[in-house]
Image (cartoon, rainbow, N blue to C red):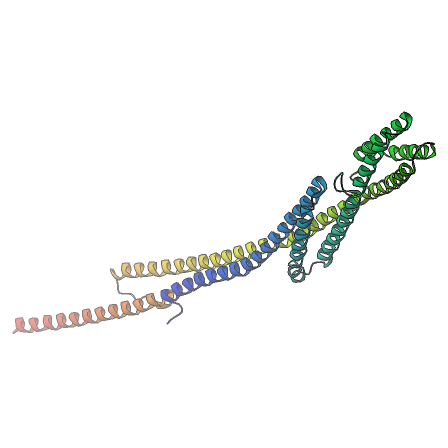
Amino acid sequence: MKWDSIKSRLLVMTTLCVLGMGLMTINQQYYGKKLRALNDHNVALHQLQRDLLQLRRHEKDFLLRRDEHYLALFDAQKIQFVAAISTLNDVIKQYELSQSLISDIAVNTEHYAQGFKQLVMQLTEAGLSSRLGISGELYSISAQLGKSMDTADPAIADKLTRLKYLVLDYQLTLDPQYPDEMLLMIEDLVRTKGLSTETIVLLERFKDRIHRYGSIKKRIGITESSGLRGEFRDKAHQVEADLEALDNALQPILQAHREQATWYSTAIAVLTSVALILLLIKSFVTFHRSFANFVLFFYRCKRQYQRIDPRSLGFSEFRSLAALANEMVESRREIERRLANLESGTGQAKGAITTD
């Protein structure tokens, strides 16, 4: 097959189209696989963020309702969350990101869970309800002191009643002035004559429990941002910040791969199109020149015999036609020459006969 033929040009254009489409398909498959993997990691990261929100929800449900059922949910969710963190190790290694992005999440999650467990232990000791823990003991002592009021002097009964209400107010408001006031009142009652030994023992127990209850509440935190509540919530916020940092690290990689895939696809399409357009233009110019030469050749042949130069034609098919046209011209010229010779010979013969 001649490479300067129309057939070869068509074959080259077909090859360029197939090659361009093939390269675009390979490029889409290659970067599509990478983008799918990155997108899966991105989805896993967002799922981690949702898992953390669910973990925080179980935490808040427990603190609001003081129901141990939410502790079980918290533990199960925490195990799921920690297991999901390890699935992101591959993307960290693959794209050479800082290993601390994962380790910080794991460490701060563990600190957050430990802080919450310490808070739960303190809350359990203080009492998850008014009948449990130290709150239950204070309630029980208050009830026993209430029985003592029936046989006590009116002044002592008033103080015991006041003490009972101060405890309730303190449990509701956690106002730091109430413990001091209650301790002073208990010391005053203990020094009062006429109290039974049992009542004094109850007051001493009451004093000890009030002191312990106050210490636990301070350790837990009087406000949302103090004590254990503030510490473990700071860790929770740190985990959220770590997840956000990992997301911020992944997004540029994802965007870069998208842009790279688009750039390569565009480059392949542009190069293929330019090559096809140039080949089409060259083929059109060659065809037009060859066709014009043939038209001019036939036009001139009406007036005089001429040969067409095959070298002036671009495609081998036109050169073959030019060779046939030249042969046709030579054949016609030879036939006309013979006819001319025959006519000349016939004229001479007729002249000789007339002379005779």
